Length: 336
Ligand code: ADP
Image 1 (tube, protein in one colour):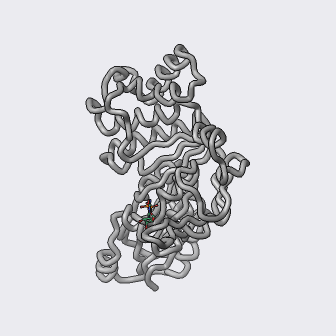
Image 2 (tube, protein in one colour; image 1 turned 90 degrees about the vertical axis):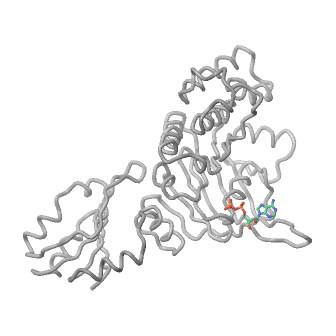
Image 3 (cartoon, protein in one colour; image 1 turned 180 degrees about the vertical axis):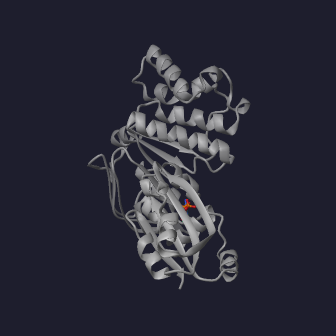
């Protein structure tokens, strides 16, 4: 649905070119939720704004739905932008218009919808985002989560194929963030919409993304299936993002390790393996004893996973490590 081929972007600042993105190659498949994560200044907004050509690339090609759009102008560009909805961190609603009029606005602008079509679509969209009873209110009368729901309804107004989300949950509290992410996930599934979101929060990636790219200093340092990247981060930047969401501090972890004897392992269970009673069975068979230093069971999108940090003592520790290495279980030795 979206392809970047060797895309570069430099901004012209005080007479010189400052690179914001370099050598970006990526492909977003139709119907997936694609996340781009990075710290502030990494180039996320630039990357997102290149998709609907709010920014022009300095080099490389951009294709949307199979069409090379890099040089689109005028009517082509307008048509492209109508196929791409966008939502923003600070919602960007028109404060002087009611909720219903905010949602109707892009359809009125497009000029291709009749008055009754607009009315019907506004009703449907507000129902979809759970705001049917707020249609006559003004943005200032809504909570942050409600404002973002209006933003989502407005972004869907002209029936786009792609939805771009620019830090869409960064201004919301954790509970509201989850409900807005769930809504985006539902829209992706039910409408088959391709979603690209940029964020600095690994939590958002974990909740709804199928695949993810990690941006650092204007380059993609890691990309892949969200579960793979999250469970086995390779690049130091990705590892830091994961540690942040796990609320793990490396120093604290090392202090904990110093308090226990034995071999220290981290087990990662994925899918059905998450619920298998592996640990007890292996302990019985090999005579090892274990203490749990850290653990969680959670989901990455729809994939359940568990992660346990253990110390093993006594019995046949080598055999235990071998047996723990079961299908869909990954064993990392953190201390020999
Ligand atoms: P992010 O969204 O990850 O915070 P941005 O895409 O906003 O990153 O910015 C990437 C880099 O490009 C930064 O160094 C930023 O200062 C620079 N930049 C972004 N927009 C502009 C602009 N309009 N003019 C000049 N420099 C810009």
